Image 1 (cartoon, rainbow, N blue to C red):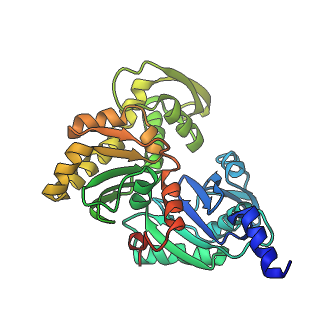
Image 2: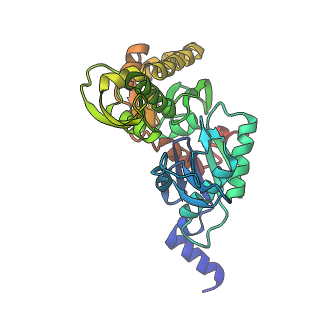
Image 3: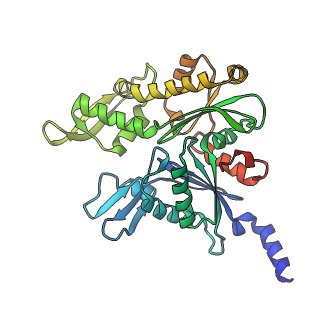
Amino acid sequence: MDFRGMIRKLAGSEGSSLFSSSMAIDLGTANTLVYVEGRGIVLEEPSVIAMENDGGTVVAVGSDAKVMLGRTNRDLTVIRPLKDGVITNATATLAMLREFFARSQTRRFSMRPRVLVCVPSGITEVEKTAVKNSLERAGAREVLMVPEPLASALGVGLPVAGAPGNMIVDIGGGTTEIAVISLNSIVAENSIRVGGDELNESIQSYLKKRFSLLVGERTAESVKITLGAVTEGNTEDMEVSGLDLINGIPRTYRVKSQDILEALTTPVGQIVEAVHQALEKTPAELARDIVDRGIVLSGGGALLRGIDSLLEGETGLPIRIADNPLACTVLGAGIILGDLYRYRKLLLD
């Protein structure tokens, strides 16, 4: 068998996993997901990195780094290098991406990949340049970008190419992306820098004000997951430990769901208002379509209990939560990777 024949045989037996040169990345404020063509989602990790202060040596990335939040000494810094969906620390982002690239490409003969990255629809040119530069320096041979709402819509199975309007609300870690989509484009949109992070911060602020209890980011997130709800009727409670700011000693309080409902009022209200604003921008014919089709929720925020009922009550429209709200954005980007020519109009210039 000649060399070309061997290559064809290998490609046929191993699939694109051996020679894959395309991957999609949902580079999120809270989590980063990587999809490799032919293999599916190969990585889902928190967007966190731990680095030594002296020299910048990487100590841990992803889940291993997240458990260090609030627990490090003066020689080590734990960094979340993205804020509100965009890069705020280029050095840490580059180091994190290099590690994620290495984990995603399991074969040493893999080529430098073409990367399709999902970005907020309201991203600026400066922010786009920062994302492109970080990915290229991390090992990408080519960087393409797609607005997160378009990728999410594809990932949940919405017919983005058709004339009828579809509306998606993607509540991520740093942003909430709202888009009305028709004929492969975003016709009306609203992007606000409010998401899971702001929900956590509101819980921290509430506990500080209500109980004089100082808690860390990881504790606030745990409270949100356990007690977080935006409608009445939840009677759960849990013990929450932190630093008593009055006495300066560790203390535990029992916190109720009603407390967290109150804590989340402001950021959730901002999300509801943003949805109203997007609906006001929607052309009449597409608005009629949305009355029939409703709104799809995606992103981690879609898992907040009662958010669908709240939005349904506020808008009078049917609300559906995506089957896989955490992964639908990167899955949609994977669909685009599979047929770049067909979906070329979805990409940013």
